[in-house]
Length: 230
Image 1 (cartoon, rainbow, N blue to C red):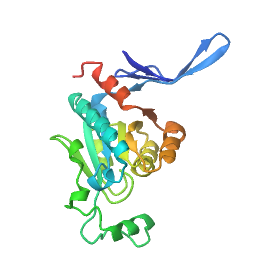
Image 2 (cartoon, rainbow, N blue to C red; image 1 turned 90 degrees about the vertical axis):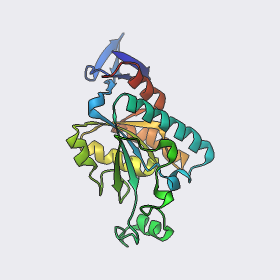
Image 3 (spheres, one colour; image 1 turned 60 degrees about the vertical axis):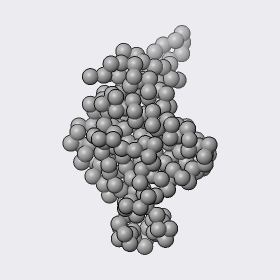
């Protein structure tokens, strides 16, 4: 069943034919394969939506971002899609941070993201619910230093829908790692944000499409809500 058409991509809940070419007069038109959502084998990863990180975003970006993320989580839960929260947190004293790590050495000096502190908690507007899974990382990407891969394999999940802050941080690192492990990926463009709008644009328009399908929250919502999911 075809559910939505956006540009070159068709979003559906059922399996579609692989990529093929259709002829239009004397011109061959490349038809992209449909991005499908099988709830039993899909997970939504919402990454680094923590108070201190959300608070760094401009207000005009923060409000719409949280609204879209909240709607995605609500519909995903109704569709019985597994939701996995990924957060960055450290023990008191930052024993996980090497002085050789340029990024996290600076973070250590800031005193942020210590386990149990308010700034490291997930924003209440997208708070976890019973049945959701929490994964704690000590580095940038969702896979490095975590048991995320073990969880995904145990649940037989092969398709990931990504939301995260920032686009050039956790989202980029996770896309690269997951693509190398042959996961099917979708990045929700308006479920991600970056302090540098131009970097965000380049990643969404030019980098991510090489390894993932870039979709909007509206396209995700239409895909999961158009069909009655069991």
